[in-house]
Image (cartoon, rainbow, N blue to C red; front, side, top):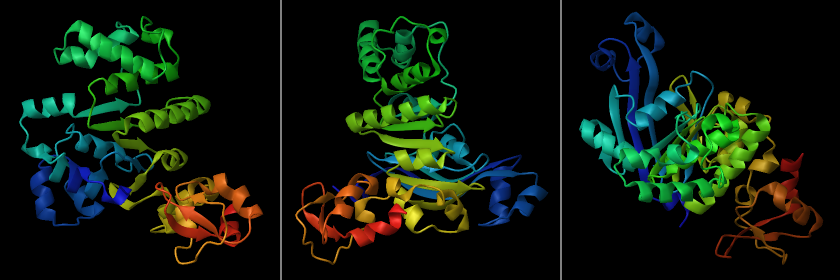
Length: 339
């Protein structure tokens, strides 16, 4: 099934989060699109402004923006940690605003899971105790929760460190514990708010690789928050760029590079190596018949096929995951993206 055909599991419908006294009633009085001056007059701060988006089942949806853009406020709205000032937030068809406190707690414990930048490990518990903790809160028996925790610990590559305490682990290992803990409840939607930003660059790169490995095995629905465009384009199936509490553009990473919505997006993408982000399907010719026997995967990055295309002759067939020819690619099509 193509990504665009997958059903949505999470939907934001014109959601607003405004901080200040009487924010809800004042927002309704200010009209559909109040400006900063209107908020300032009433001593209000708008963290999220009219955001609408859908996250598809099984995709990595990255929300990125600079500090103060509203991305972390948005993810807290998505998880019910912030009550909405206006709009609707749906997870698997459930409107968070309509849930009782008990139902919201149940949703957070069983349908969603969160990983934050600061790891938030319990210092008095071992790795095993930390990873098993969400199941302990659910009332799962000790043997069952520890069996599940051990599987998650092995999954993230920490087998043999079950009895270590957090202060005996490196930063990257602590983050792996946080990731393992968030997976023990087998969440439908996995939220990660800048989980790697406190790590050193090399460890951060390793954690991104580990994250992609886990996703290839688990196929979770993931909402990933970051301020790093390089990280966003490496991880995202689709991404949304935020500025001043609003969504500027939503699309695949290559969509933002090939068709930026405005100058703000252009500035983000200007220095990104296009051959490492763009995929064959993005630049192929769907109307020309191929006349070369060397097929190219439609989902391959340009850097992975460059040598074959440059040294080849004619138009290479481009094939989808089922092996069906969906287009053709000539070395002249590729040249402009390799410079």
